[in-house]
Length: 323
Length: 258
Image (cartoon, rainbow over all chains, first blue to last red; front, top):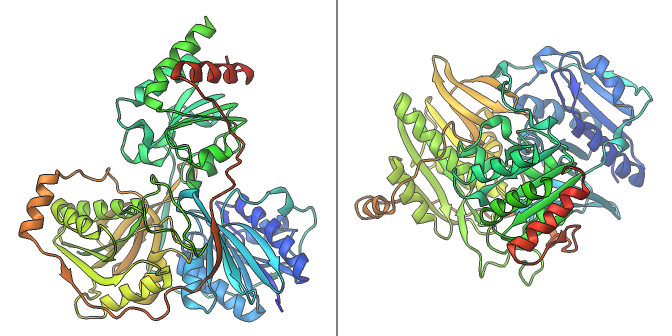
């Protein structure tokens, strides 16, 4: 029988990350089904105040310590492990985000708890849990059973509604004493995103290109369509990594989160890391040569076509329609 | 610097993936394998570091289809040594893979020296049990940082950049020896002509280092694997490119952007 569920709350620069509320919502549902308390742990400076927004938890453990701001993953894993040993928590939720990446894996390697990564759904099944994980770029789902209900669950951002993890009540908090060992990894400073380029988060129309655009020259075809539509060009990671567009145009996990009225995705398969950054677009139109591309599972409109062939035709038609 | 880059093969998701008759694993019959994308960046970052700061680059992989080509390509790109561990990667979870690799480091064929830097792709598309880099770091007792997109040598070790979100990055100081999970190299991975790879295949050889296969291959109970609901929401526009373009223009007009 489960004892409690622990959420590793995530904060960056004094702000609670959305993933924290997503995990609290997901955790609340399991806690209710199992009849156990939902607890959270929040680390870093100013967290005594920040903890008040985590009212979806029955209790929040707080280590208000500046040494824990952007602490090395092993340091955070150690704090969580100590807490798990103390409270007997048998389910730990950790975000599959860039900030938290690696913490769950270290915890799994150091404890007897298995980790289920990339989780998008959690169901209570008898005394155990069944977690649904998204693998192979979103092309395969796997149901994993934690028969004894013990494990670390890596929660994929955007899989659970934020609203269900928000609450107006102020949760009881308990300060935990953490002695931070000197680490071989030390945070020095933030590097702000470059400014001066088009702000893709403010565009009504985005023309996004992915691997299917094939060459740097073809990016110009997308640029022409964006101009005709009065929007801007953005891209998924492979295009940015090739240096075909600047970092400021990246949409997805490390890049921007965008919500335009129309998101046109050309040659983008729809891997989870990209989907995370554009899923809330009002209208998604996807063009890809692969009819099985995951992007079609979430897009509103789609066409199985070669982006490079379709782009110039579409640009002409848009110009004609606009007159 | 003693730079070791771990290379892992993953199914090429450009090909269609099917679930095998057991309903749990991938059907291997038509699977094509390729190097995990972030691993390719880990190799590039290792080669850039070697060029800037000196040292030796060793690439290490477990056995998998097409892995020899990947190892020879790494040598052609500038790696000094390629090691293949003849333990099949098929069916091995992250925990077991980390164990095999840590055994390699304690085998005498590879050792963690004070100037050792282990580079690993920050994640792989089949990391169900967790990421390899942090698990390997625990086995080796080394510090770890992931989602790294730039690495430079400094007086005290390394200065690295880690990606957060929204284009924000953090700069960290890392003491060696260490394990880093690489998201992307500071430059796009270099291209190497096929002719050069062929030449390397004739002149160089891959070291095979025997490591005992792990007894526990996976630690998770996968009950069922399947493709996401094909139903989807997308209304698919059919027809010639002109007809498809017309329908997209109609959709754009409906959304009020033209």
